[in-house]
Image 1 (tube, rainbow, N blue to C red):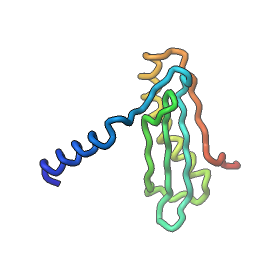
Image 2 (image 1 turned 135 degrees about the vertical axis):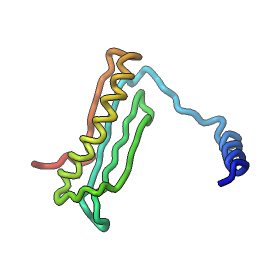
Image 3 (image 1 turned 120 degrees about the horizontal axis):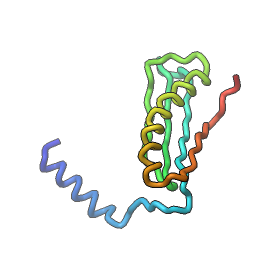
Length: 114
């Protein structure tokens, strides 16, 4: 994409979405991590995903196929949990500077049975 097309794309985005915004409210002072994963399905890799929300709005997310081949779903979930908590630890260090009484929650779509 040339620079001119990129400028047109950005200008069009601002013209169409200038009235849209994320609203951060102090009502839900929670740092929330949602994770979900599945073992190898149609692909030769596991599908991993997570979403981190702060004050009710998404601030970080990831969805990817990992080259890790998980035989069971809980293996894929623990790989996802490991990846997500690394990022969550950094975000929590920054968030605690803003709000020292920040609640932290980790939720799974389906908690694996061990």
